[in-house]
Length: 552
Image (tube, rainbow, N blue to C red; front, side, top):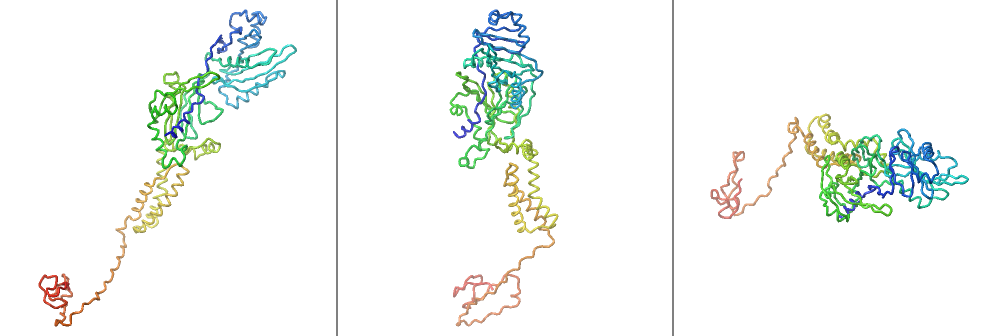
């Protein structure tokens, strides 16, 4: 049982389903024009474009309020902040139509990053750049230095495009290199970034099909598949307007994970039965953590074990406990696991139920393999698509299998009986024909089953063999040429003749012709064949010498 739980542990690995770290804000600024809010350390004095004059900020920069507004309008800035040691934080926004980096693939993000990098002034020295995701939102991080005769500025620059707006969030230091304290401070600021509203057009629901297992389900609207840096077999979908809400799916072939030496004759159905009676205490003992709300529920003809558990994630120096709800179904010797970052009472739990209600698991064992380039190529082939069609349509699967069985097994023998021979076959010969045909059919059907991922049933072959035998001998009793009866073996006459005693005066009694030709039972002799004494009527032995009486 421990080995089974070990396999289950693999499929229940909880990856990337955690809420962002909540930070204690000293000062949080909301910028409705940009549609965001952000936290700044208390040592910063900030001026917001739509806000009242901040005298502390104006005294640091040495501008009047009017001059500050003109500069912010010219630079598309909506917030500018300075600290006493002349560290600056700024936020700018520009309309860019309908662009949204959340719709970009990894390749498109890298291409766009190269374009943004090349747009910098040649006098700007770009030191580092990469794509960074924050709360499900892609950002371009560019670190650069700009020098002049009297001023050297080092900047950490974050850029993203959301809802048709380009956002620039920068953190600059003057006349000194960027240190670890500056990096930590900027990380705290950018991690506090949140959207006030998301006017992005809702993403429609779509059907996802796992090319490895053949499982398909409908992903609810406003979800997008998450690109994972490391493919460990899990598939994740995050909610666009709440990136921390992640629906996760994972499949594991439990039957294949058990070594053949330990598996024995256990079938995939046996593995399914072993997992039908998992208990809450067994799971708690194995995971060494409490599990609650453990129950079984049925969605779309699939039975799920559903339970909640707390998973601890470490972010920096802080540990975060996240509640995870897991629904696991066992079929075809495989586990199909779906996870939601929360519990039944959470706001988006209905999305999880909607996904579970749409899951379609093939009713026959689907070919399980790895997502290597070769297997992906095979899964896109016409044969793989036909396999998937058979797996999803049980009626079509029955029709195809029945047609192949009739075409390969009984049909050739039926054609031989009615179209070629046109007369019955002797029973002995029919038996030999049927046995040879059954062996050939067994081999052919196994070859077809191997490529079709099915199985051959011996009972079906025996049944069709019996039907074919009856067809071959049909009409045998009424045939025009009856079988020639075998000749009876000739009976050799008895050569043993007992000698009559020399002392006997009896002579041989002649047998009449009527007695030879009589059809009644042979008559009982009147005299003993040995001593000649007259026999008593009905006696079985001679009353003198005891010789048995034999009917002539």
